[in-house]
Length: 89
Image 1 (spheres, helix red, strand yellow):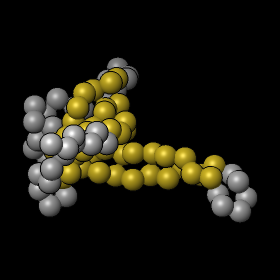
Image 2 (cartoon, helix red, strand yellow):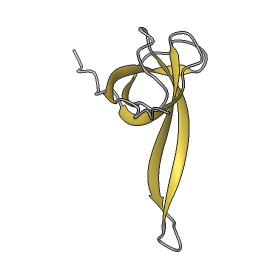
Image 3 (tube, one colour):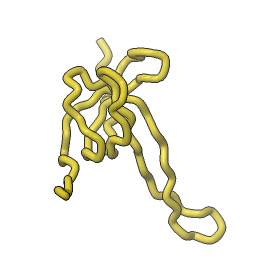
């Protein structure tokens, strides 16, 4: 029997928690410009499943690839790495 491959893991920042059991995570990566060599920031947003509604906006989270959970959700929340720093007025 063949071994399953490792699932992709990504680290990003939560940008929205408006939906029930779902979060939007902003993933950033640096790519080098093909001609000029300058590093450019590229942003991609994905939806992830958060069963406990535990993540908050601004949290740094790790998400893991999963089977399709809905039309746009293909990721699950693995763990919260760092909470959002809140300022008290």
